[in-house]
Amino acid sequence: MFKRGVYLLFLGLLAVGFWLSADFKTIVAGIAIFLFGMLSLQKGFKFFTGGVLEKILRSVTDNVLKRLLFGITTTTLMQSSSLLSLLVISFISAGLLDLAAGIGIIFGANLGTTTGAWLVAGFGLKVNISSYALPLLTFGVLLQFNKSMSLQGLGHVLIGLGFLFLGIHYMKEGFDAFKDHIDLAQYAMGGKRGLLVFVLLGIAVTVIIQASGATMVLIITALAAQQITYENSLALAIGSNVGTTITAVLGSFSANIKGKRLAGAHVLFNVFTGALAIVLLDQFVWLVDRFCGYAGIDSHDYTLKLASFHTLFNLAGVIVMLPLAGLMAKFLEKVMREKKAAVEQPRFLTPSALQFPDTAVESVQQETLHLYENSSHIILKVIGLHRRDVYSEQDLHEIIGKYKRIGEYDIDEAYNRTVKGLYSAIIEFISQARFTWELKQSGRLHWLREANLKLVEAVKGVKHLQKNLLKSSHSYNHNLIEEYGRIRYQIALVIRELDRIKNSEFADELPLLSLDMLKGTIKDQRRIAIETIENLIREHKISADEGTSLLNDNAYVYDIQANLVSMAQTVFVDYATKSVKAEQALALSDHELLEVINPKPDENYEQN
Image (cartoon, rainbow, N blue to C red; front, top):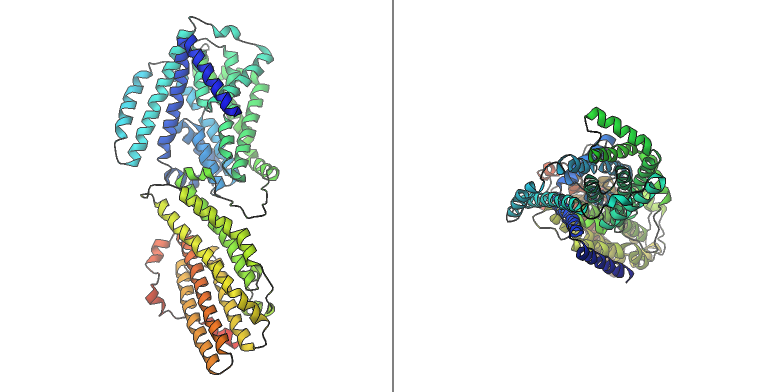
């Protein structure tokens, strides 16, 4: 209610300003047009985030210089650090980037955003920029009628540039006309008091319009019209640099703890840079004068001197803070800890990830791995084994022999606490990812949804086994104990092999072929189990009722194994293996699997 009241008050003040001054109306309209241009520009670049921008981002994270250059280049092209900040936050939330890499990109974005001031001061105020706007708008609108998404994206970019130019033109015209009636320069303030007041004013304006680029254009056009002094414009520029962190902060509200840490890094960097500029303002002014002298910039061209100042103090901040990026990341990870909930919460599914196809897919991929860890833990607990033993190199028969007795385990409580909520969150997240089905990411999400369903079915399948497993561990019939030991072995073997495939521990085998061999082993295990049970019934070593239960339980085991392998095909192999296409030619069909030479590990089991 309070926010709504403030919003209505703000609209009312604007209306009064429009009524009192036509020049004020021109300036505010220029700001609005400029902001709309920035939104159009961001929308246009989002057309190229269906994999292209994400792939580039992934390829530049292995080197500090690459991260910095990526931030500079991308922000220079988009003329807004907002989209890049949101993209990096979503990538970090999805686990695609580590915090140190994200910090390096944000440092570069801060430098890249200063290029806008150079364009406005060096070009926008020197020529009739509105004459370039109209052709850009015309071609931009025409491209919207094309079916190609890339051309539509280009159209939005052109429209954005056109409105940016128009916005600059109207702001310049408004301030030029404004000075004939009111001289805002009379409110100039000098000294430390003036510095702090105008820094706070720059922060406030940037927080309100949420675009430091627009704030800088406003400052530059007001300076060009001599409505503010050069000294006060420097303070406003410092304030706009601090205020721009509001975008990252707001974007982090929908991110997980990793995204919030990046927003924290953004705030720390910009506040430090602003403080550095305030403390060393005289030194920066001297440096700007020296730089402009070497660059041939007129000493009275204050707009270009302001652009120089904006770049130099940001550059100084990067030079000081870049070597400390790793320490900053560790500090934020220590201070901003993730809270543990009683019920398992999604770690990677955030609203910010839904804005970009690749990050949405990666978020679901990572959350599926999270669900697999929880599901495999439950499955192993039900069969009385520990993950640390199964994932070790120790012989599985020895492990099962060591844990002959199976303890009570509340699978329903574990399912509700660690599986059900995650599965529901994944399905809800996928349903919200409304990407065009032309995108490969939509197909990927479909298969990931199926993989999660297979995981849940595997957990439900092991629940059916629990009662008979507990009963068998207290039985005196060694044949029955041995058959249920076989069941435990078969489940544990699949989980161990899937862990090896997931972690790419195969040096000489391709994962897809390893999965094929595992499918063949599972089919052979089932055949041998059925034959063995029938022989035990025939020889009266187990009762018919016990044999029937064993046959039903082996059917559950086969379903559990098949569901886990199907999940692994999507999550561990198809997604992670670069050589999948080459492997597909070698992969075996179901018919061919019947002819696979099986090492028959169960024969060894019978011997034990």
